[in-house]
Image (tube, rainbow, N blue to C red; front, side, top):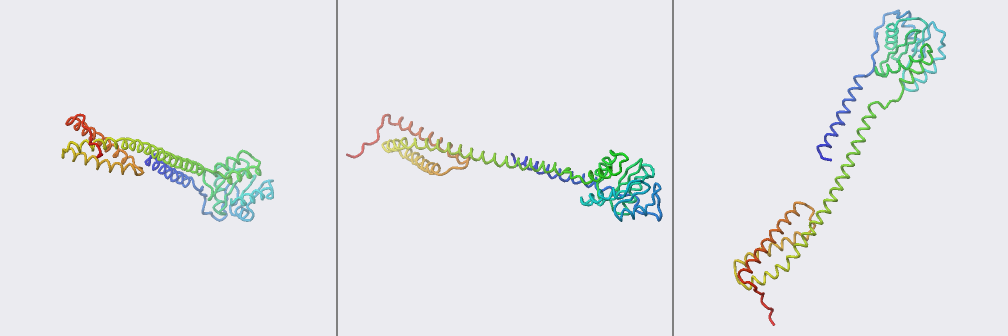
Length: 296
């Protein structure tokens, strides 16, 4: 994986985290309405102060209804065990959706609780801790049960306290993908280095074979140049011999760089060309010349 692609993946992760975080902030806690309550304020036929006192007491306010507070108390206790400060008002007094919503906001503001108001015709909630989306989902879950206030309250609490992976699961998934990509990239690079190293070894071995094959040619050419006694030829041969020694030293070491292998291959090809040219010139000056016989 190229470095620039890796950089793009990390940038994508950062942008995703920031975007989702801003999204969470923008859909943050639903604000409670009616922060300032007038003394004796009545909304939808309910005296707000009286209902707020009931909610502060045990989290339940049952007004003009056959529902007993004892039926709702376990639901409030369950909500608080799930770290939701919850209160529920159930009333048989009919009121509009708007009044029900205003009453829930006023009670939430007065008590600091997440308040669910259930009437025969409406069900609304307000919270300073739940996000607007979670509050809406919880209200929808409660609405399914119609006038069964106990079941509605239970459904509201269950939905409001439901553990949701939300966008963090997506972030986690992206992180996992990037980690896997990084591991794959590292593994691929290691395999590439191993293959490259093996290839360099093969190239170096081939150069060593070619270099070794020149040894006999250099030896025979040395004796023939000596017989001719030409200083110019001797100088060129001596330079070729020195270059050959340096090349042998280079190839005798562990070559781990492709550039060094390429340089050695170029030098070897040049040396082969020069020795071949020198051999042809010697043959042209003295065809069939033989090296001197060893002293008997």
